[in-house]
Image 1 (tube, rainbow, N blue to C red):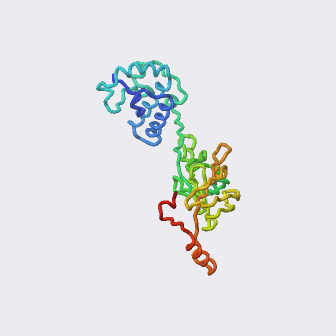
Image 2 (image 1 turned 135 degrees about the horizontal axis):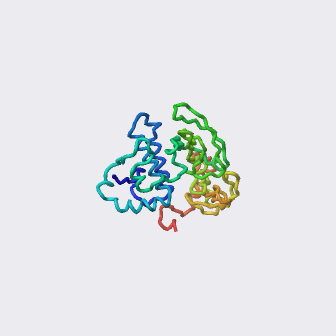
Image 3 (image 1 turned 60 degrees about the horizontal axis):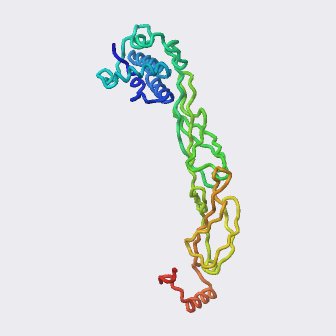
Length: 304
């Protein structure tokens, strides 16, 4: 009598697996070899019965322990190294000679349907897609409509509610909007990955938001209190004298939501802007400054 490697029948390479892994393997094999998708194929029907038989044994902790003792004695021998091979069963029997010899009366398992010859409900596959959302829309939340092509080739429009403060890369789950289930099984789900897009004003870095702080040369040199926009507010910010272009000023708790009731920071990056055109008075003042100032940014000492 041929020893039956139930783990191999379920596509598993080892007996060091838990119940969840066994269940997932069973469903994958059942979906692949189900008679409804392999009409008229006798060998596939036999394979499907063996898949159910394997699941009956391995999903029951008591029978699994009993089977594992035999499995450990057979793995590595010639028969267990063969590719999948059916053992004989009576024409009308739901279980093989190996099963009946070793386990006797079939084990009760509500998920196995070969005994009653009912169709096994199989959940449909999940599908994944992604959409881009602007940083401000992600911060405040928004409802977006997306159109996707279904498995049948038709376009379908979904309404997706983007919650306020969603994180970049986070996924939204739409229950039952995946591929259709088989034999009365539930439809799969749709997972939508959210990609947060920066704009010309704000850039997301973790939970911090970076923005530009444009200053005139005299504001940077003399210092000034200025107003700067955060995502949801206008902030008053003091710029110290002598601040350099490229320096960053951090304003606490004015960045992006962190999902814990707090916020990141707003980071203002200084960019000094020189006027392209000068009035005669401005030009005269700059000429005067040039003549009286000893500052040379190209000299090493000027950076200390």
